[in-house]
Length: 531
Figure 1 (cartoon, rainbow, N blue to C red):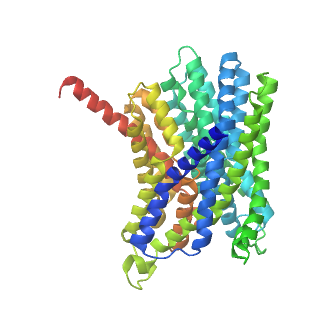
Figure 2 (tube, rainbow, N blue to C red):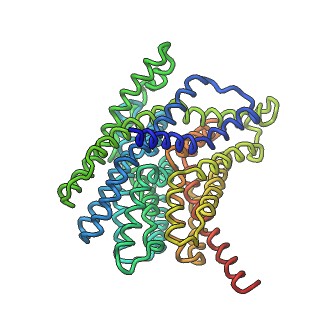
Figure 3 (cartoon, one colour):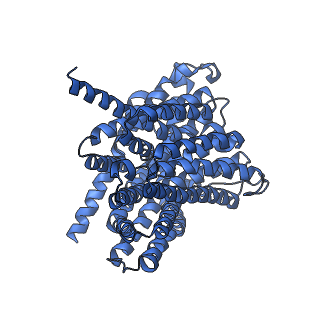
């Protein structure tokens, strides 16, 4: 019992540590820069508490139950040497973990509401649920295929850069045919797939597999699975938008129905506790539905494919229970706190009274006037990335495998700078109104160019770095910031311009990590030559 309490206390402290930088940035801007009170402070506080508790239970459940058995299964498949079984497991792993990804759930629900408000789909709860589920399935299936492709790459020893470049070309081609309303959502989809659930399991699978196959280098071949899991969903969601516009996935919209969001009803009632409890029950039921595929997946492959008894089944059951409770609390907290805070601060930072100190019309403002927005975006991007647990896990593994050649703190700082720069540039794109695809394609060109000159060993890790920056905390806050900016900047469409910040947060770390490796290599050469 004492051991469990110590583990839970450690998980709580880790959650507070991970969330503290975000809270500090928000407090700094709110108290010193904006100097404005937060509306609905009581509900926001409750929401933040739920986020901390939810993340604590969620991570505790993963570490005590699901992660150990997932890692054990990966090693078991590698030992058996069954390619068909391994590929099947890879697909099921990608599908099962992604469908329950909290960041993906949050973004899909927000996208469905905006699509309904814009009359892309019918303004009904059923239509929004179907749209959100379609997005999640598109992403989940593509992640499953991506993990399969990544595993096959490790087995065959294919160079990762050629596959990634081919993926970039496909993204550009499909983008040309996709409706404008889906492009931002599609680019963001690549970032929300690789988060709390997916990264540790996928990283363990890749490194474990590369370590078990003769002739494979864990550093060169073990990394890269996350990169595929970030790239293929973009193509899948673009195709989902093309199919939806053609009438394959949703019917002609009927937008006359009035819709009232259930969470807002619950929060505005006089009996706040009762309203929150009712919403929690609904969220809990939906979470059970989302997590069942993972449990079924684990049990099926363990019993019928690997044909070994589940070790410590009580841990699996307890882990599942904690994950279920944590995810439900976390999602409810997001709706009550992080999404509203992101949108609220976006509105405050774009207020002409704050920017110009007068009643100057917002239409008269130019992109140069929004410098506080860029600073806020940079600080939020840096603070969330540097404390990201998934990034820390990958950085530790990279330092271990490279025998110290890659410094974990150097890697984390490089990724954080890239993420911060990307989010700041993304806010500029929203404010200026330039099409997102121009920026993304330009970034692709930079990445491809860097790939030819970067050290070969760093390339898979750099590609993976883009996927581990966007967590369950980063995604809701950054997504809310983008949506809030699009709502408050004249001439911007929430559906077209509101999405895309997550894509910038994923792409720029790839650039910064390869730049970090190139600079380190130059310094090493100079030291060796005595210059």
